[in-house]
Length: 253
Image 1: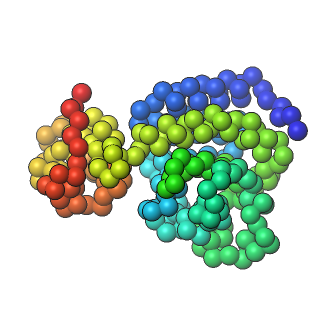
Image 2 (image 1 turned 90 degrees about the horizontal axis):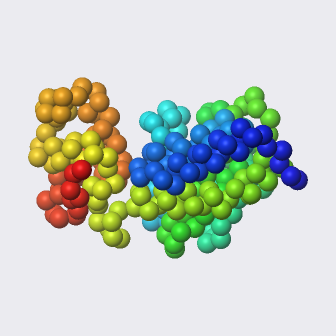
Image 3 (image 1 turned 60 degrees about the vertical axis):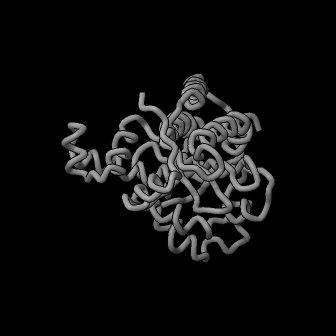
């Protein structure tokens, strides 16, 4: 089936891809790509991120994670039929949910505990392998009240798969640490690096707020982002990584 696209859809998709490939921060890559992709496929939401065989899933949000989706990257992803397919094969795939529903999806724990409460109704997900441990994923999602994805939307996702892979490869290069195991502050924005360095020096939200002349709430948001980008969970872990030489320090712009 040949997709029927408007000029506006093509323009927004092309602009999103161009901006995403040129972006340096994972959140910027996500914001630019998902804006164009939502419009292209008439999706209620588009997510991109990384599936990793040796650690938790990573969804890259342009803003804070959705309230209903906070558990996905830490626990629920293991029950996701798309992740299970990724874990069981090294082949790329792009499939509608119906292709993985053997008739038991709506009675599964994943549907009961996560999918249905989220308001999700239908999806198309593509997974693109980078190496033996990692793949990028894109999920086009529709919520309850929308019609199911059809052959035209699947054809659009397939027709744009090469461009999607390019964006996900960009995301992987920008997200992953320098070297195989090192934690790099290069993955942080300039402000986030400033916050990280002050945390390493023993600062707290109140003192960092004063030092950088920003609100404590903004500092706390930056701290959460620093921990998430570095795969850490606390100031103690950040200070230990710095003490043990596990952090690389780029020069601040």
